Image (cartoon, rainbow, N blue to C red):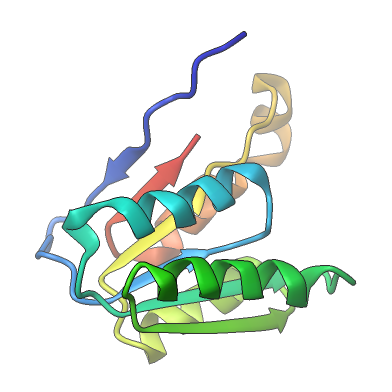
Length: 138
């Protein structure tokens, strides 16, 4: 059994302590662990959290996003949870700008080195577009 990997924090040259957090949530095990990490970590206490589920619409999306909202609210967070079907890179970038997000928390996409060579990495593209510190969950 492989042990869980630690998150990676990427920062920009204008790093400041976060005041608003966005969790890019897809309902996967890794993003569920991210929600639980935020809920249980005193470093995030008192910060407003926006949970955004984007991508292809899914029949269990409302149930998944509700789980995330309830988990964070039970831990004392002010939470806005939103499902926005569409391109995740575009929607996450728009949310960062429009909501004044200081920290993005997202799962890292995993692809083979060969696929990254030919198709690029969605994680890398999103990191370039985000322009805010990003906590990558792996």
